[in-house]
Image (cartoon, rainbow, N blue to C red; front, side, top):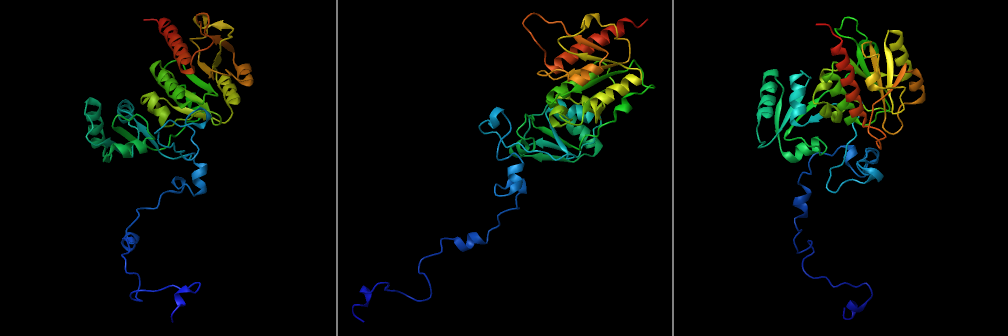
Length: 327
């Protein structure tokens, strides 16, 4: 009817009533395409597990800041398997017979003696070898320097502190106990020093202490496979148990009763207790020690890195024991 097009709400229709005359823009085809596997809960920003995993907040630096371009760090559940990366760490772990689930090798990796040894050892032991794109290997190792090699190992099995009191083991017992050492790299360095100087093992508290993680494995350069690490429910009581078993307990601290060169207990069964760089030994642990020993340093230096101080103390004990051995 003339004039109807001027009514409010009137729309002039043209063409067929069978639908739009323009194309769908590929929307129907895209809707049929697969979107890949569903991501894990901790990888989905909308899921509450994402907020609790640390992936959304960033915990890799002071103040929670993450370096630009760094992949998100993933928290591993207790008892989960670990990924050890780096050519030296991988080869040492394979040499030590660590149970390895998988060997990952980057595609087109620059081969050297360590890579060839890793491939040969894995083949002889029947360990699956997976050639992995470097981007995927970066993700598996949380962005660590892997040098084209990584292995997946089961969760570390801790010993009991009593296992380190073994009268049948040759040599004078030597154990290192850690008090509030929270950096796994320090733990790895200490394990390596214990292996180098003939120590019998390491004791760490169950709480507020670094554990044998991938970072500790790598820093130890495979020594974690040879040196037992025991967990103590209560470090003070464990040290008291060592004393009852005939050990002397000495603590490393800058305000020591005696300097390391004057240590007279080197030939005795020893537990060397190392505290954190900042707080040192806790009060109860300090009171449990038979003697507090300091490492002499030049003026102006207040403390040493825990791993360095432990290595110096272990070297001095080993040197004194070797000097007192009659030929």
